[in-house]
Length: 69
Image (cartoon, rainbow, N blue to C red; front, side, top):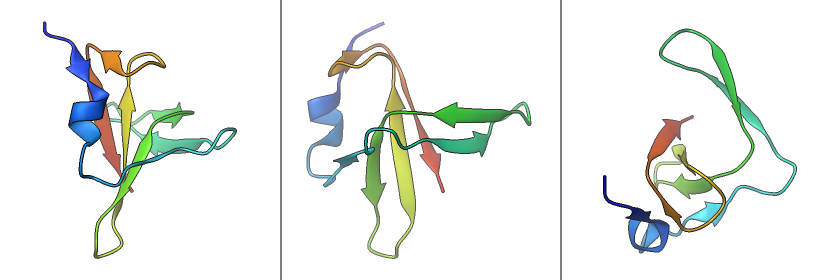
């Protein structure tokens, strides 16, 4: 699997890093609560907020997922 460069993925999206200490909880596909502690927020013009979460804390990773709030 090829590495994902987050700088390329997030380019032109006006992404904002999730504030330190903030956490968000969502219900995953197995109907289980999952809490995220890091990621990048992207807000659409209509106000819809999404958070991109990636493996690890650097800018190169193997996978990511997006949560739409």
